[in-house]
Image (tube, rainbow, N blue to C red; front, side, top):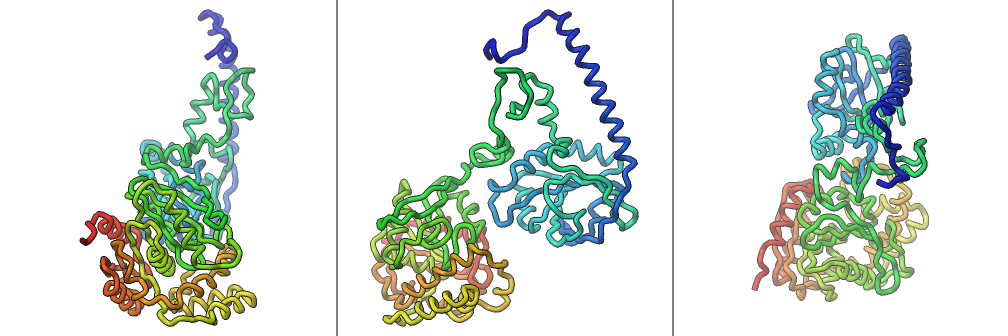
Length: 488
């Protein structure tokens, strides 16, 4: 503290006079707030159409959220679907971190329930609530359509008459600061919030906005974990192509290779890096031509192998490579090509033993992409991969990013043909071949063939779904394998 950024020093009597003058305005402000609250109590109300939400007890009505009380205060939490904990809303996290059990108990004494409503899927928002250690009830409003029951950033107030719910009031933006004890306390300190917009004396400290997030995480998350937030960057492959990557977690290095036509943003395993990051330093990257990586011009699988080598080169020690589907086959090709890989963990790598020297499949895919990229994606999934119709029906709507990524299916159709198990007989790295107990039978045959051909490979079948195993089960098995001694 310097002479230019501190209040004037005066005696007690002078200070008291200044305080008494300020107190006049403080009381006027309080009474003005009382008058405004009186106006709120005279507001009309509007009905909210019957709305189904999902909570810990499953589906229920919005009226059930009141927990038998007549009034409900609900905060609508912004949600980023499929994103990890560190990427969720820092402002909403700040506000909810200040809603205590004690506050909710006192609200209940006035016949009022506090709850969080969120448009995110229940499984995701429940996991975030648990991660943050919050006890207030959360509900997914993903199916809601009434404007009074959906949205984000609003603090809404409701009244119930039997099973009919009415909205009586709402605020957003700075209006939600009523929940934020932090602001109320800072506003009464000498330096205030220290935000650029505040009217403060010359020389008072000012700091950039965005202080709700520190070192890549909403600040309150650092009370729950000391795990570093993910870091992003790029590395340059041997041919000059920029490859975009993300690093998270700590421990032994593990590089993930995505399956065909996906990226870090659009992967079918969006939360697996978070699970693995509890045990490893996890490196994920966009394969060339997808996501934020460059495409490098004319494709050759040797370039993709060089991309993986560049990623392995970022690690500080021995590297385990995890590959999913065709990404697992690419990992095998890289190991056979001499990339410095310590261990391989592979989830259902497809092999196409029959060679395609004229690249007929690749050229057919390109023709279909040029004609209709969405139809090409459908063709690849049904005719090449064999995705069951019920699985296809559950896939999320396609985005422009998906369409860009789809153009890389020709890469797979260049390197997959001619991949027999015997081709990898010289891969000596310890290799774990993982299959789901609900997958296509061909995947067991491929895994068995690889185990027979490779000197140090084992196969496990885990509970799962078609071409997939849940994050927890998969992570547990990968951790087990990486601790297993290599065969002599």
